[in-house]
Image (cartoon, rainbow, N blue to C red; front, side, top):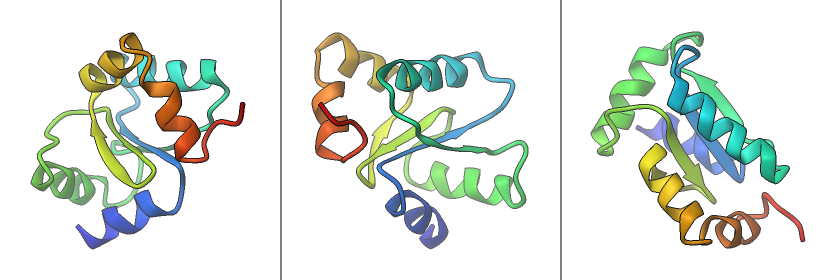
Length: 101
């Protein structure tokens, strides 16, 4: 769990993903459309990806994508899309220093 905390504290937006997951691709595309370049960890392609996945599960995230903004757990695809529909995602990205206006 300490490793995950360290990973998410180093960048404004971090996405834990799997390369074959369509929801992960959709969320990554949403951030790219904003001009945000998240740090993406493909759990099925990195060393110790399974350990990281278990640590995320311990935080209450049992699916991918799992998104952190400003070092804080935001959630998965449902939470990100909900924030987008409420026009709350962009202000979060600005506050985290991931997006400049």
